[in-house]
Length: 118
Image 1: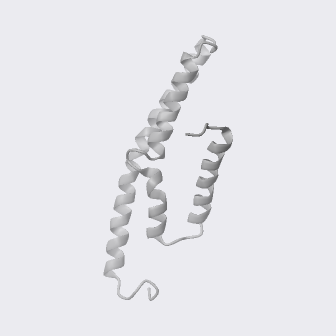
Image 2: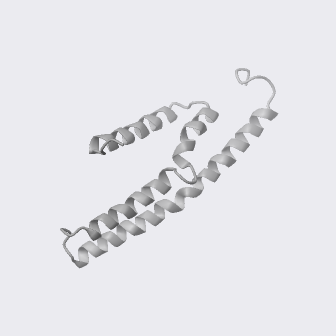
Image 3: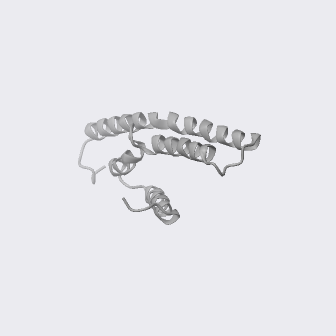
C-alpha cells in the first residue's frame, strides 16, 4: 500500500466534492443512490470509517511519547472520542438508502409508461 499523504486524503475529499456537485445537478434517483451507497455501507461506509479514524487519532495523540501530558490534551482527546461515537451512530443511514430504493422502485413500477414518458 502506498504511503498516505495529505494529498491522497485531499483527493478523497475532492471526490466527495465532485459527487456533491453531481448530485446537485438532479441525476436519476437510482443512479444517485448507487453512487452514495458505498459511502453509507453499514460496515465500511464513511460514518464507520470516520469514527474509527477519529478514535485512532485520539489514541495516536494520547499514546505518543512527545505529546504533553495536560488536562487540555486530555479534554481534546475526549472530544475526539465523543465525536467518533456521533459519527459511528450515523451508520444507520444505510437503512435510509434501502427505504428510498424501495419507495422509488415501487413508485416507478406503479406509474404508466416508460421513464421518458413520465
